[in-house]
Length: 56
Image (cartoon, rainbow, N blue to C red; front, side, top):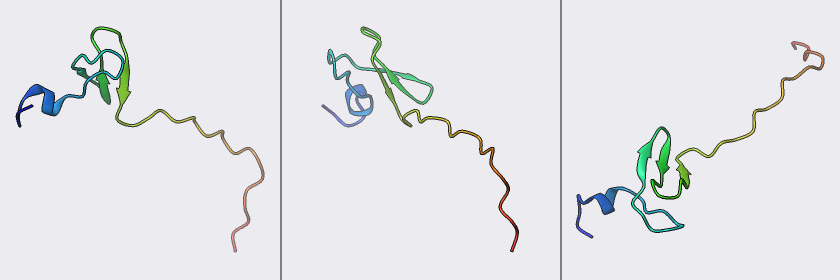
């Protein structure tokens, strides 16, 4: 692998070793569809529906 080559900049698919393509917020394997997200999805926190905290 040479600096500046595609292999040095793009990750390879952990399933089949294919060079992955850029997508919004990560990469996707063009062969099998495996995705690598830069920021893993996280569950949305539920809205607080209890009483307000008093100001001190």
